[in-house]
Image (cartoon, rainbow, N blue to C red; front, side, top):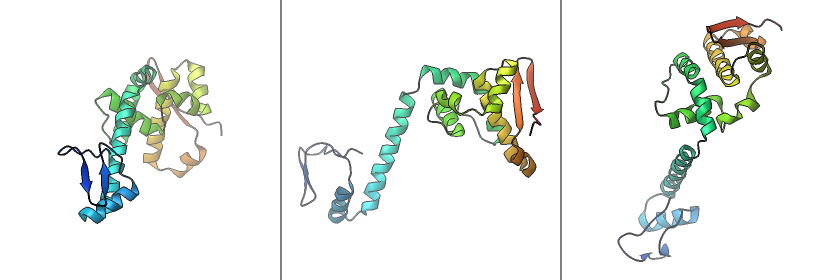
Length: 177
C-alpha cells in the first residue's frame, strides 16, 4: 500500500515519519503509526496485506495469455457443468472465468493442464481423439460427481473416466483395476 501525503508537501508526525512521497507500510512503520495515532499496528499491516492482494489480482487479470483464453473457451461448456454440480456460478467475465478455472484446477496457469492431467484421461483422449483440455475438464467434472456421491469404493479405485465425444457426452467406467 502506498501512503501519500496529499495535503502538504512534507508529512511530519513527530518521531513517526519524516518522508516525502510514497512508501509501503512495514512492521516498524505500522508500530510507529500505532504509537502516534493510537490505531493498532495490525490494522496497518492488514491494510498493506489487502492492498498487496488486490494488486496481485489486478496483475493476474492483466497477465492472462491468449493461450489461456483459448483453453478456457474450449473447456467452458464442461466448466459450466462442473460449477452446476458444485452448486457454484460460473463467472460471466472471461478474465475472471480464467482465474476461476485456475482456482478450480489448482493451477497457476491453464497452460499447465498438459503437465497435470492424469494418465487415464490422457490415454482416453488420445484413444478416441478428444481434445486433451476438454478431457481434463471432463475428468474434473467426474471427480465432482464422485465427491458428491461419497462412495468409498469409487474413491479407492479411482478408475472413473468421463469423456465427451463429438456426438454428445458419454460416461463410461474403466474397470481395469
